[in-house]
Image (cartoon, rainbow, N blue to C red; front, top):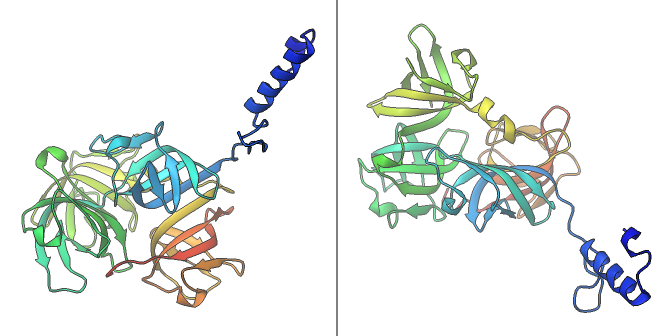
Length: 333
């Protein structure tokens, strides 16, 4: 750094060195104190319900100004909104801020409401065979509230599923036919490659003759019992005619943390038996240890059906080892 200053007068040399120190994270912060160096950002993957601004996910504010947004409705960063469930890959300071590189919008269903149960507790409706429950925290878009829902209304729903497969809605948005094909996400059963059929969510028959498989390179052979898929097409009664079948395990690989990466995930606990132990949060395998800390609750409150946020590190087996588990208020759910 000193080569261009070797023969400079002393005053100019001092001034130039001061500017260089400021540009390298040294210098002063305007109060006479040394300026803080920029934080070190480490790789992070995350999934959960976002809040706008840019993307606030599991307590971390990610700058999404240069992120690549993946969404079947071709929405960009400006159209990301409160209550959407997203997957994210980026970098963070592991405290409160970060930078998003990739953001994938993950709604669970888009289709017409079939039934409404306002007397249930919590209140529920069904869309494309999927039971959806709402809470005081559910965000409504294009409508005022639950009372505005009507049988036959077309909606797109985001949320987190419980162990029974009920979708706890974080966002319910009224949509028109111009805003994408019918869409349904869920686990696969009853695969019949002769008839080009399988069942999704246990109650909807998917016919995929002529459908395109995604991501690139995916094929019928990638259908696995218990694996998660997302189908796009049209639903008539209980039969979904698919134009596209997305193999989620393949599509989501880019969002899977590598060994040593920091990871945050929000979801409902299932498969829990004991702590320390291994169970699922949403679709993620999580392991607690004696060093795991708990916020907004105690270890004794960890059980199936509770909504939590897990922060930790991915181990050599690809399991998220929990450093911290925070219990979350799930509203009326």
